[in-house]
Length: 219
Image (cartoon, rainbow, N blue to C red; front, side, top):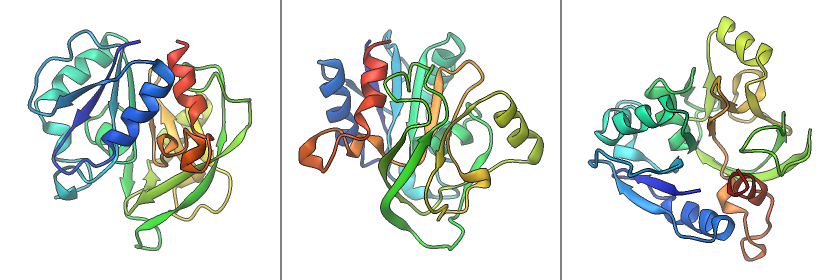
């Protein structure tokens, strides 16, 4: 699987993501500057975390209108895989590729801590190496991670089994229904707030997040 990582001004987790992808895929991903307009035949596009454009206006709002995002939308329309983590999740919602929005954390504080996520389904290309219902550790680092959507959208996500991960411990950012990550309707786009790429090697303190990348490598 050929993977690329998008780079926006202010993004700062691209190297962490590259390490995770290289470990599982065996080859280095391509870095793609936000002003480019072609993806070059990639299978997987990854939007990493950070503070694109300084979170000016709203987190992810400006990045969603960068030139490369038209190529990402076309890639998604063809059924390509897309992964957005933290700021990447925010960008996906701002671009309309995933429903809902990420608001300020419930306590209006930036949160930098470990959290526990429950895997809601393990029959997707992103989760097949996790156990059904498995709970794993993932670091979070965000000020705008409070996932919200209107009641019909939340009901649809639950009814269509599109909730990927739920906070298993404290719901410290206040996300609706403890939602930590969601899939697109075709299960080919995943957005989540915590950072599985920060736990893919024992030297990082654990390998809890590695199954996500191993799942993609096996696709």
